[in-house]
Image (cartoon, one colour):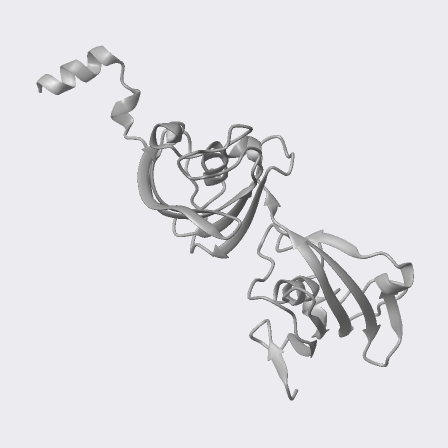
Length: 252
């Protein structure tokens, strides 16, 4: 199809741009998007529309909450973008369809409008205090556990001003000794080796009610970090030996 982008690589999900979005960012896996959509069959029969309900539809990208084609379409969109995505049956409801509105083996056409998205909430309390956006995916999912030695690159910014930009290495659980804020260390448990993510940290997970004079961060400031997990080495088994055994080993 002319002017279409093949999102699936096999012609199963084709996207046609209707209105260009803004910025350079896209929603990453785990983000919760808010979209308007209108779905129709290839003969023009409408089967579902959030516009008709006058209520946007929200879901988490990349975790199987919606059909594959719908997911791929939304993940490819910039803020404010409007597009049309044509999804063949394997990327929709397959051989079964979804009676009574969607027949078996149906190709579906969606008009999609990207209203916005929030990062994945990786805070332990699920209080929205640590939002994560993947900027560069890792090849494999391998995340640090307690006690693992990590090597990371940090870039902290406040209102677009970079206040720290450095590499550091520490054992998970001891990041504060390297002046790594709590929100970064909590988020690292959900970051894979080779991944780069953007974090938006509420004050309680960053510099709190005191702020940070050295970095010129005021009290109760929300800050942003770009974090790259360069390396992660699991704790050697020797660390689990008690001190006497370690001393004996040291003599050998």
